[in-house]
Image 1 (tube, helix red, strand yellow):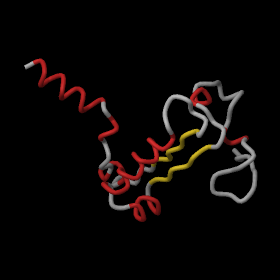
Image 2 (tube, rainbow, N blue to C red):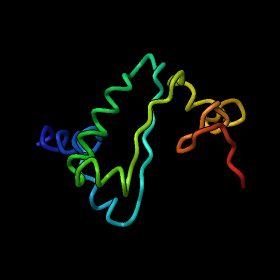
Image 3 (cartoon, one colour):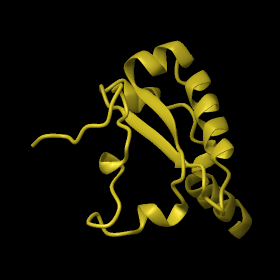
Image 4 (spheres, rainbow, N blue to C red):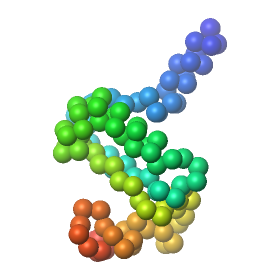
Amino acid sequence: MARVNADGVQQLTDTVNWTNLNSFFGRGSKILYFHGTSDPWFSAYETLHYYQRMAKDSGGMETVRAQSSRFYFVPGMDIAAAARPRSTVSICSAPWSIGSSGARRPTA
């Protein structure tokens, strides 16, 4: 019995298997995925492969990209960038801006 419970818990914690996000997207929710290309621990391509599986299981890449989610590689960002205080690292202060042709800072 313990093995069955352990497997059930494992299924809940292994988010790599959570690829059908229709109930989340159905509420109008959106997700932005990004992964630094200088991450020494996890390959950015693993995240890209998850995104591709998620899009396929959640209505297809065209629908997901148009309505719910996007994925971006972030050149030069490593895993530690997400853990640093906002005052030292901000993707908004990078020399590029997602969705724009030039650098800009968001306004309040």
